[in-house]
Image (cartoon, rainbow, N blue to C red; front, side):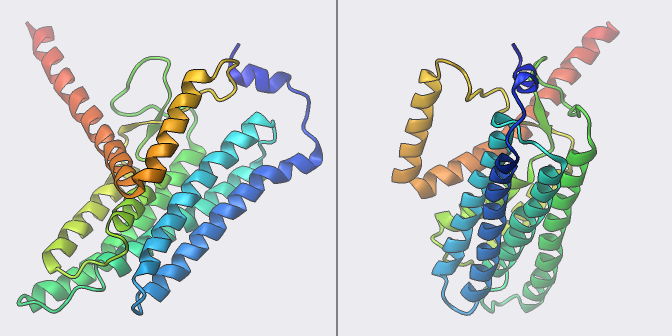
Length: 278
C-alpha cells in the first residue's frame, strides 16, 4: 500500500500536533539567523565564528528534513506549514549562505599584485553571491507551483527526482567547504576566484532542470527497518568521527551526481539518435 494511501486512512491529528512540524521549521529559521549573526561577527576577526555559521546551516538542513517527515508521519501537513517552510528556507539556505560565501571567500582577500583584478573580483563576488540567493528563491518558487515536475534528463521510471539542485543542498556545499577549512577565510585572490566560480555553478544547478536524487523512496515507516537503521548508524558514526571530510564528500558527491546524470543522459541520447537515422 502506498504511503499516501496510508496517510489518507489515518485518523485526523489532534489540533496541537500541527504545531510540531512548525517547531522544527522555527528551529530552521533560528539556525539561519545564528549563521547570519555569526558571519557578521566573524568578519571582524573571530574567524572561528565562520565555522559556527557553517555548522548552523548544516543543523538547519537536518531540521528542514525533519519538519516535512514529521508532518507526513503525523498527518499534520498544512498550507500554513508549507508557506512557513518556504520562507524559512529563503532565510536559512538563501540569505545565510550567500552572506557567508561573500564574507568568508571574497571580503578577506589580501592586497595582491593584481589590484584591478582584485577590485573586480570583489564587485563580481557581491553579484554572484546575490545571484546565489535569487537562484535559491526561484528554485523554491518553482518547487511550490510545480505539479509532478519532470527533469530534462529523466531517470528511472517510478522514481521521484528533484528538478534542479535543492536549495538546502546548495547551502550545504557552502557550509561544507567553510567547515572543512575550519572557518579560516580565503586570503588568496586566485582561490577566491575559484570560490566565486563554484558559487556561480551551484546557483546555476539550482535553477537548472537537471535531475537530483530526492531520497523520497526511503521509507522510515517500514516494519523491518533493520538495514536502513544500520546504514543510518554508520553514517552518523562517520559524521561524528570525520565530520569535516564527510560533510565535504557528501556535498560534493551530491553536486557531481547531478552533473554526471546530465552528461550520461546527453551521451546516451546522442548514441541513440544516429542509430535511429540508419
